[in-house]
Image (cartoon, rainbow, N blue to C red; front, top):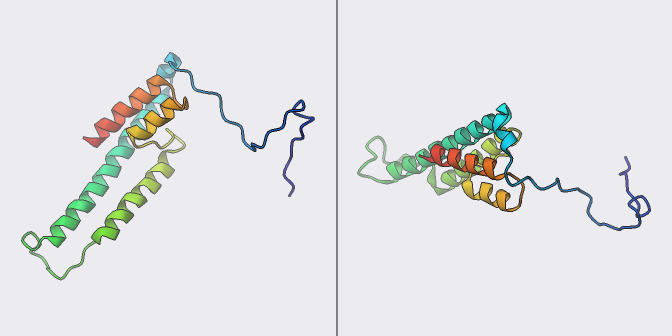
Length: 141
């Protein structure tokens, strides 16, 4: 298979090494988003993704702490548990799964810092960024 290559003559004599095109910047305030169900579905997806991420990862850390503390581990002191590597796998695995599941719905931000960075880069509007950050903070409670 050959790749379609656009020549400088086809672009009007201008040469560009980019093989992709950035989408246009998002408008600063897009009030029309508030009338669309897909916007609210994306906000709900961000809330649920953040909730699930923190639920699983915090429980993994709590489980590790209980298993390594001899005073709290009354079941079997020789039981290994997840360990530090298990905690890292829980964090990485949850991010992988949740971004994969929500990327098509909301973009898979899951973190207010990511949402803020995309807002500064003009990839999301102010209304969407604020609603995502509110949903992510509520999901973290």
